[in-house]
Figure 1 (tube, rainbow, N blue to C red):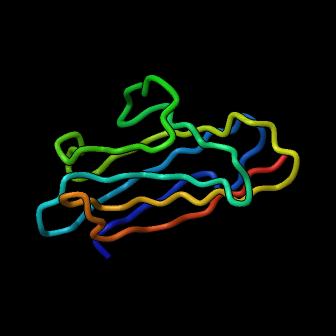
Figure 2: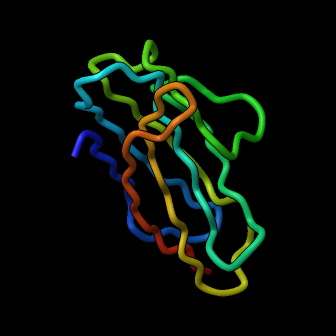
Length: 115
């Protein structure tokens, strides 16, 4: 695989934050990496709060990291679930290598969010 992706911890509670990392070893050209999160079976959102140690301004629900902002082809981010869970949710995080608006390869991880 040309992309390594991880998110910790694997389970969080209300207002919880997760930390993620992406590493790309794709030998060809690429524009960057996009990280998406989906709270399965709901309309709730995950908000990205930082990328590579810098605060992200606004409520960003989809994080694009340009290749020139990935020293060593690596990036780190934090995201938070800012809604009160009324039950247990599964949150799917997906990181994809993007080249000219096309997805080259992706990796998926899951996090449990509960009250």
